[in-house]
Image 1 (tube, rainbow, N blue to C red):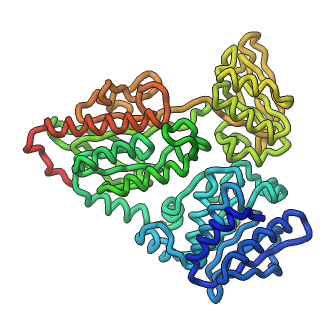
Image 2 (image 1 turned 180 degrees about the horizontal axis):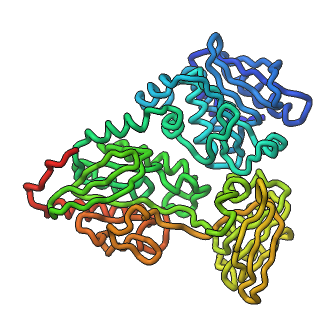
Image 3 (image 1 turned 45 degrees about the vertical axis):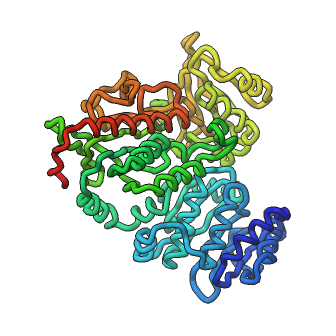
Length: 526
């Protein structure tokens, strides 16, 4: 099942297993069950601390559990966790086998103290780059706290269950049989959801923090670069991020990050976070900024109010809150979000195998999505508002060569229709004014980005598109406040540009600090 090189690598990892573990397979005579057995037999052969039993009684076949012998610690997979989920499998083997996880003692203690019974089910796809983080977070929680159980389910292998439970995006998580959430989630996010007192405790902890010299709001590439550059100057640096890594976490392949021929978003985000933590930076994750308050005294402290009720204060602020997928803003879009309307073709494409879908947007991202989906789904209709596609010509040629793709230009989407899930899409022909409807099961929206600046309206100067207006130094309309990355008017929203802009904003903030009066007011600490 596994090639020789992969076996060698896995065997080296399995040397870290300290507690005996048992693999319990639930299989039948199907080819997929035999494929799973081959994988599990390979794993068993690589460590004398691993045994395999094939008489499991799970109704889902093929599936298997990884159990720590003599305890109730374990995790489960329904399917064959290869592709993006192979890392999840390796980590599950190590963690059930006693290898310590790479999370803070504070998080481990929080999860260990969660009371109650929790049965999580995650529907994932092996091609989904967002799924492993959620799967790994819930697996780890089940290892730390035996009252928490988790099974990761490959939606492509259990289509009947996917249809019955109306799973139309991955990862989709159920808790105790009820829908819990969709999308990438970290262990901190999940723990905060089920630990009712977590937000209040974190707010009280934040309120005690002393003012920063530089407070970075946002934890994407721009925010990470800004934090590192500030910390290297030896000044007190904080980062408040709603989701550290930002939109990079939702990026599949990255092939234009100079000096790195290929990487993937989650991997780059993890590297950014690791690099930031190598410096004396106070990282406050899962914190959404709600208001920026400038001091009346030019030498006073800025205040950033957070959604949990706490506030942070700082001499300077760097805003790098990034951008998010732009919505179509038509009837039915929000109603059918994750019920046929989705924004990630890599993640959710396998759930629409053999079905009819639409891609909205004729730029590079839209055309690339249509090309990828054409190899999975039954038919793709690409709709572009403009009179022609805007993607690179090489992509357009590839798209037009595909037999199961229809391209419609001058198409203004007007409504997504359906009952309990998407059944069609309406659009107007901008050239003739005629209205049309396309019958389909999925809509993939690929129409660009929207800056995360709603919380800044009325406070700082924004462009007509809602971006923070900055000058060549990253300075905004408020002295002492700087902007960096996709949230600003700087053109070309690219990772490498965001990092450079973050570094520049941080250097500008430092320059601002050294020119401030020495007796700057720091009395409003709380």
